[in-house]
Image (cartoon, rainbow, N blue to C red; front, side, top):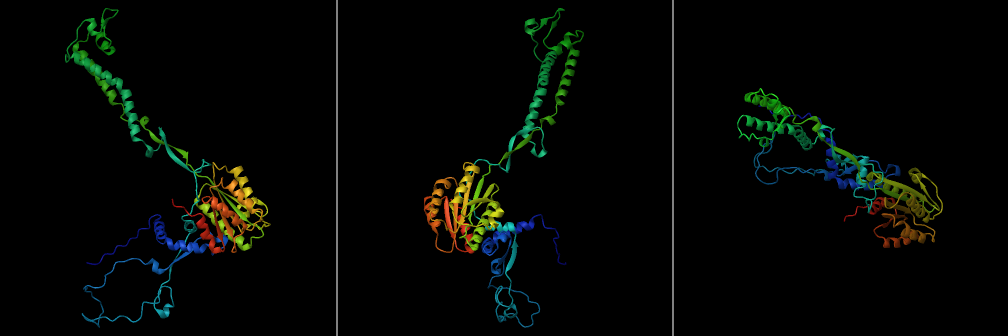
Length: 461
């Protein structure tokens, strides 16, 4: 009997490869995060958010497998053996297995193997770039132009799709309808059954006196009961004998019983469907103020680092928060609110008065972003060089005007040298407000991403 071969020619199910890729990314999460972190400071500003080629060493993708352990007695057949017989010891091969993965030249050091390289998409790159980051102290504020909705139960309706049919409510309505339509007929049936039994002698006959029979004389001298059907069958037909009266009652009972049976058990008017209405989903509104120093003391290298920091911040906000606004402010001797294009690419420069940016921030908050409705954040990047008499003013404005309104304020000083006057003033602010104020120093491009992560790292409670 020959060996059977089964070949699976079915196409991959929908999104099957996506599931496998997800599993792969989770498994090598540590390697990918390290590669993403290294890629950030090696890129130009315009390429910060692009995908990346990730290289994983071969030793790290080793798959476990089952095999026979050493020792024990095993018998096997090696086809083509002409040199050895049972009991012979096999000599070890000369040399090793090669120079290791990716090392040396395989032509003279044995076989090697390249590292495993794969490409991650822009979306995956940003997922790993901003993993475990969040806006600190984000609080629920008033609903503000919510774009998301929840569907909530809102009673029942007579129209709808079969999938929304409420069986219990429909059966309850059908039962009530059957009771209302058939109740009077069933009562009538019971009354006629009693009278039929009386005519057939199945119940003891009552007294024939007018008081006992509840009968009253008519104007013609005949006695009429309070039963109109019995009047029509008996009193208005005095010629009918007892047998004919019984037959007439039985026919009437048959008609009433059939009319009750014809009442539908469930009708279209009984159907009730679950009704759902759209309800605004509570959304947390937040605004981020980006304050960048573009004064003459900021060299092109300093400005490039500041732009990289704010691009990371901007991508992080847009990636993780649906309802968030970003306000861009550039300042030298005066501050100006600008759009995204001008913020990152304008070449305007001048002297340095940092308080102008803080003053403009406070004015915008007062006019457009009431603190009771918005989570307010601010990030400031500067080389710290400022007019000596302006730095204390900045510290005072932060304490009295801005920090009572914002959830979190982050200051980044971009300088490879010693701290400047603004840093020393801000140290007192940080000591007084450790939860809502944070400050870090960036000395080179490689520090941008670590500093960014330290400022917006998710806090564990």
